[in-house]
Image (cartoon, rainbow, N blue to C red; front, side, top):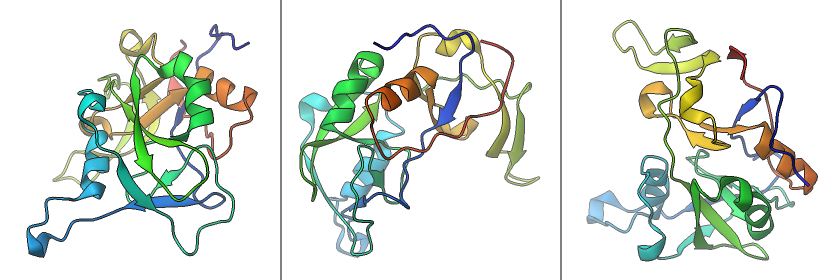
Length: 203
């Protein structure tokens, strides 16, 4: 049984392993034909939208690639926008008790065996303390964050969250914590890489 009490919280950027496990893509609309049916844009916009979509959701169809690795993991890399998670049914059932309050599972048609879902993360947390963090900006004329070397979080924003998005102004990363990782490892789920973020301050 997973214990949710950590002496020190660890954080990771969500990182599906596209080199070892098969990935997918979604249909891109043709702008020259005024085609509004752009599934790729619909998927990308999930990362920027905290509004629940399940009731009006129509399942999208994704495709694999000829050069895909032969193995299919429980966490599928979505081409062009890996910040939107795609889980196997097994992964969702294992993680739903931990992240179900902040996520919804959206059905997709896919080329694999079993059920897979796009996971719509419904919580964007303005949790990055930029003053205390070490960040790299895009340029002198463009102060937007390009890369975060060392994170400092506002604890009160994420105390009870095991998955959350940072807003675009803070780099837009999808972050998971040590409780999320523990569930993944306890259930033998495959397809994620865990590189711990450097965080200032103790939790």
